[in-house]
Image (cartoon, rainbow, N blue to C red; front, side, top):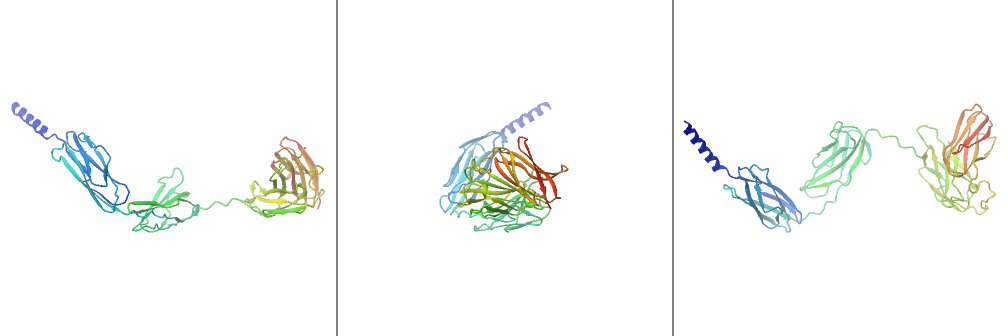
Length: 429
């Protein structure tokens, strides 16, 4: 009994040894590249697999014009190896049909040679696509559902398939990229629920044709939701840009500013384009008025100036130039108290005083810095702030248009060093 079992075991060893051998499998069994434009590279990837129980060794050879194999000419695969990658490249140079063969020779006793046919057709290169543009929704648009996306058609022969991509431009959005496939249409309607959130998105379109992909010329953004209110802004009116001013007084005028219902205080700035040291910038507080008349004797003659207005820290949309050309008026001299640089912090003048209802204040500011000018009633209550911010060195003109009861008021002006100047104001009715 023992002899018979031992004999059977020896026979099994002999049979297994006889069948232990490499076994080669090649995929794919044909490489057809189809129609490829002249001078264009196309690559098909294949694989050699050893499904046997012994090492598989072999060689690789390629034949046929237009077909190329850049890998090594020999290979070794252990049993049950994951495989050896074959990358065959086809580059047609003539308009014709190409054929070749990829030959793999190995130590596989059952299939020692495997031949893989290679096929391809060279065609005239098509003209490059002219591209296509997005149409709607326009860039930075605010939209609501349903959203109709529209784009131009790509002008190429044959069928074109379009893919609309919409991506949420926010962090933490689940599944932020959505794609829509409108077949060959150049429009696509996206309904509520198709996109994850309300917010900012970016969108573009890919056109697929003949194995190629062309992307839209733009990638635009849009926002789902109500648009924010426009930022406050206002423009200048007069004097127009490039004006030549010859009078002794000029009325500067600008548009009103809607600062979300807040009270607005305007400051007119006039800046010389040269000789700033001898002719410093001037500022004029216009209160809530949209016009201010400037005594042009405060400005040096034959000089070009830049003017603009600031209302509640909002700058006017424009900054315009004018030239002062008043030959009939003698130039400013050192005898003019408002010529040149200010040497001492002071309230130079208040005129008229008494007044009804408007008076103008001239300040001398020797050093640039923060200046605060306030008006108080006799009970110490602040009734107006004429300026509370940076002023350049020089002379500045403020205005107060009173709307309270007649009586005595106090003007208090403080500079950056803490110096305080006070002047009495008398309002008549």
